[in-house]
Amino acid sequence: KWCDVEDMIGVVLSQVKDFQQHRELRVRLPEPVPFLPGDEVLLEQVLVNVVSNAIKYSPDYSDIVIEVKQDTQHVTMTVADSGLGVTASERERIFDKFYRAESTRHVPGTGLGLAICKGIVEAHGGTITAEPNQERGTIITITLPAGEQPQVPYPWIPEGEREPHDNP
Ligand code: ATP
Ligand code: MG
Image (tube, rainbow, N blue to C red; front, side, top):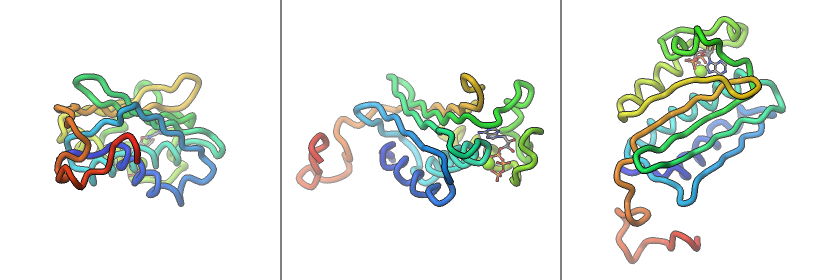
């Protein structure tokens, strides 16, 4: 089943809205917006978890950037924050069940979110990694196989009932 990445991000933004406090969430999407083969609800859950972490572990009034890119083989989604960051030695362990980085222990959490994300992403044939952001903070990168992009948007909708893609 194909997921529309733009719709997915809309759902994610609405789910974190009450919780984002004073963070500015910026979204950068390529044109055309890619589709992803996979389970929309599960992939939304991955993004909600990752964006919630970006909110939780970054200061008020900082920016969080959600960026989607596509090449022939992959769709890559990154979530970048300017928060507490994760040390090199902890960067892989944060995807383990119950692992919580030393510097974030004052913020409540169970350490399960990213382990669940990793399970879902890997079940879709993808990868999820963490790296430092330029000055401070963390970038989480989710890479998923792009599959064969559908030639038309919403190919499962009968032709006569499709809305024009370029002129909504
Ligand atoms: P929860 O299960 O409620 O999500 P959690 O946020 O502690 O709890 P994970 O989402 O699995 O658990 O994250 C694991 C750990 O990775 C966090 O406790 C934190 O130490 C670190 N971490 C995750 N995302 C970030 C981030 N954006 N910035 C800094 N540290 C992070
Ligand atoms: Mg979390």
